[in-house]
Length: 211
Image (cartoon, rainbow, N blue to C red; front, side):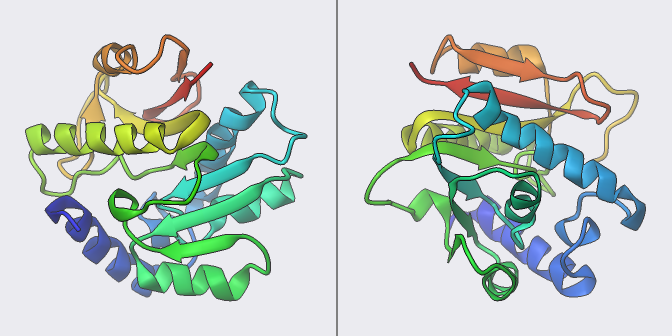
């Protein structure tokens, strides 16, 4: 496990122990921000609907799945897919295993994960919006490594989100990135991508698709 992943694991383990399975427990806002949590889930799941794969029972790998919130939201909204979630935080995975009858949950590091076959879609919600005390250069390298790993494991496409750089102020522990820089990097992987910053949060979602 690399140093950045270890920092993220330690941070989120403590946060989840303190707040539990809610928006605060994944460090995405205040107790009153549950609607923002569901908005993020909906933007992540647009990866599937944009590809017109809603009725084909695609396979999903949710990178940094936490306590399984996205999976629970997807079931509530009527999505049907073969779901796997992976996270480095043991306490979150323990909760997910105890509170979800279906779905597969793995406690592990995505950089060390070598599945027997690729997944149709990979989702990464919130992992690249934080940097904690990591410097920008190292975080840039980490982000590219994660995006490449997800891309390599996908059959159809991937989605991740980042903090907008066009803001009035920045918080030290968050990871802000210009959409223009991200677009340039995306084009080294594919010419089939969408950058969506239309929703009312200080972030944007990036969708990359294969043929």
